[in-house]
Length: 93
Image 1 (cartoon, rainbow, N blue to C red):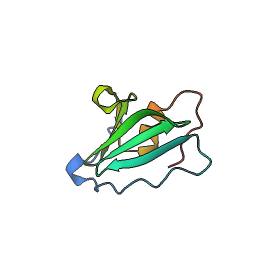
Image 2 (image 1 turned 90 degrees about the vertical axis):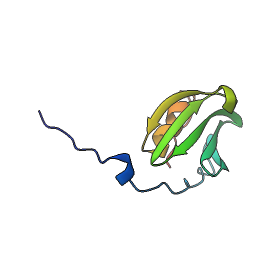
Image 3 (image 1 turned 180 degrees about the vertical axis):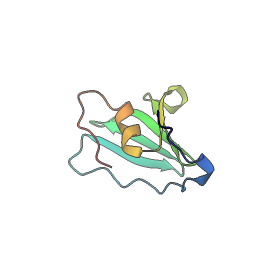
């Protein structure tokens, strides 16, 4: 059995802002704070993504104060997918 070495979070590079969603995408995201994105599907808010160091924390819910953590990941596209409706077009960020 092989072990996989994962660098500690402090050794990972800080995150840069995610590029905008493609113009033809049903799933859209917008940076609403220095470390937070709002994710919309067909114009309806489906969740938020908080940037915590090198980690993207996906929160599912239409209101930030009631959103529930769905996933923590190092990949922005995975975070968007985690809170997108199952029938929505997949993000390519």
